[in-house]
Amino acid sequence: MTDIWAALPKGESSMDMEFSPEDLAFQTEVRDFIAENYPAELRGKQDEGDELGKEDFLAWHKILYKKGWVAPAWPVEYGGTGWTPTQRFIFSEEIARADCIRLLPFGLSMVGPVIYTFGTPEQKARFLPRILSGEDWWCQGYSEPGAGSDLASLRTAAVRDGDHYVVNGQKTWTTMAQHADWGFFLVRTDKEAKPQEGISFLLIDMKSPGITVRPIITLGGEHEVNEVFLEDVRVPVEQRVYEENKGWTCAKFLLAHERTGIAGVASSKRGVERVKAIARTELDGDGPLIDNPFFKRKIAELEIDLTALEFTELRGLAGPNAGKGPGPESSLLKIKGSEIQQRLTELTLEAVGHYGAPYFRGFGEGDNEHPIGPDYAHRAAPTYFNMRKTTIYGGSNEIQRNIIAKMVLGL
Ligand SMILES: Cc1cc2nc3c(=O)[nH]c(=O)nc-3n(C[C@H](O)[C@H](O)[C@H](O)COP(=O)(O)OP(=O)(O)OC[C@H]3O[C@@H](n4cnc5c(N)ncnc54)[C@H](O)[C@@H]3O)c2cc1C
Image (cartoon, rainbow, N blue to C red):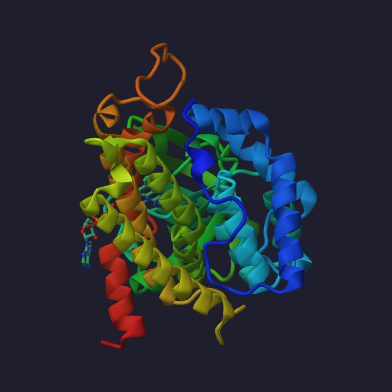
């Protein structure tokens, strides 16, 4: 195996920021914990470029849960860590630095905050502990054919029948729904009202009779997204979060959380170090690619943009609105973060050159051919294709620009 990692900086933070002695002790604690507890089997799969399954994601989730670190952003009363913004920053830096997989956001970063903010005491007691422990895997039922950017035009209908809603309709692009125990769905409960005012937010058991999940295979050949059909699905009224027809409030709150998570600053910083390490190993003529002035310039531009994004995120964490949850500025983080992630995959593909041409998805079921070229090249092409999604999901970047124009710039 080509050890490009040996070339990476090990100890120092790449940020010019003074940490207090307590913060430095915390950094060491996190670093040691990861080194001692990150599953070796998972690390092996990542190194080999194998496809990761539900059990892989849950393995790391459960280790962090046992330690009490699975939901740093949650209020302490619901299972959060109570860390300072600096500690949360250090934690995400260390997670990225050690190349740990990202925990899936649907429970922890999306529906969890909605439930502890808008849910009833019963809903909090029923759902939050199982999100933390990883017992329930969630999916997001927002988009429909014909209702993506214009989400408020969604047509999946929920009609009241006694103490149940009867739900009929179709959702699409539902990530990981094939594994989900529960889904949070936006449904229309009033057809006469203005679009945003007739929507409710329902929590639906994915094993309910009447739900069919069909795969959509993406450009990269992966089964990541699905179509979800709902036919006469009965949902108890107590599984509606917040008031009937006020679901749009929950929907917007959740999207702001989703977009902030998409920015992925810490993992992009690690990604830049990785591209640099590859470019130190790959040759361009007689010298390493990293010495090519054109390539060097692209890396420098990327790093400058990433540093600017990082400071924008830090301003949000430490500024006057800290603790109030993400607002429209999350659109800004989403645009820049997703563009940077795509540029990283482009540079990686460029750096591995012709080794990026064979298309290797990892040793999934049915794969029996060994990849060619160094191990860091194996997933360059599939990752490049897969990451085209980042400027679309969570609300496309064009829509985020509209939000900034209206909500931030007041145009
Ligand atoms: C990989 C992936 C995973 C996803 N996972 C989920 C999920 O788990 N759950 C879920 O609910 N959804 C999910 N989505 C759906 C995603 O949120 C939508 O794809 C997205 O909101 C765009 O909607 P659309 O695909 O219908 O495109 P459209 O809304 O049809 O847009 C098409 C194009 O037109 C542009 N456009 C549309 N309206 C405007 C406007 N007013 N101004 C300027 N430009 C505009 C868009 O930017 C886009 O480029 C996922 C999508 C992808 C690609």
